[in-house]
Length: 361
Image 1 (cartoon, helix red, strand yellow):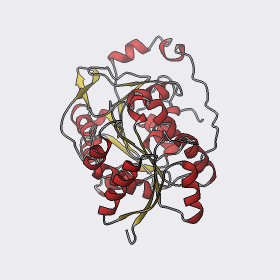
Image 2 (cartoon, rainbow, N blue to C red; image 1 turned 180 degrees about the vertical axis):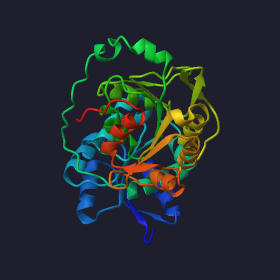
Image 3 (cartoon, rainbow, N blue to C red; image 1 turned 30 degrees about the vertical axis):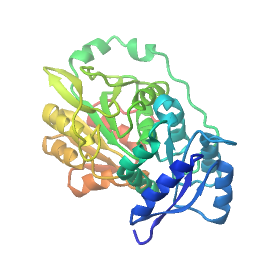
């Protein structure tokens, strides 16, 4: 970048404010514009100067971070990175922060915070850089959530059991920054008997179960956090568990997933590249790959391998991405068949799977 990214640090802990200030000061492209101990003080700072990114705690005096985030994003949207100890044990709260418009979440422990922040300086700085590139949008203070159809809409179909044994197509999806809402929009467009979907979203441990549960309450298909040996079936999407890789495997006509530990791949676990490579190996031309919004290049090599194996590959376009990093890298490598807006991807997936056209929302 031509200039440094200006950061406003909002946290009631003086130690956290000091540590984050030192971390950002050591990065050549970052600087702390100012710090604030609570949202009211932050609002005063914002009247004098506008930062590129705000790092925000959730648990603070006078006003909690979620309330401040909701007011900020509904009135004067700015990129926000949540840095909170509530994330690990109250991930529903952190997911609500993403819903309100936060770009990224950093989970800090209640004890040993300074050591954790220092050890996580690369991830923290990357999160701020990604946020600075994000295209934030005004978020209404209240959003109407459409009710979920009953389980009968999925389980009541007599053909479902047969489809478990004769799955022909499988859809694999990778996303990072901005991906939580992109995946929600994507999955909400599918009918109850959509092709089986396997998803890697870069997300911390403890988040993914709540993320899957939230999506399961919004979508017509079933959504769950993946467990080892789960079968990939029509009408269900599997979300990779945080801090574990997810691989697609095949036994005869049955596709299933393997959850496993391993080193960081492209600095991530779970890694999109790991999922896409396994799809190239075990599904080949029977797979459809989708790469969505996110910073970095995770998934670019794997998508190229999928295309070489005969799979259909789709990338989200720049205009609808929060961060056009991962899709752009996949496009540059030549691994993408089609580039399209987020709202059109589900329909294209259905067509690619030789399924009937997805119903317009």
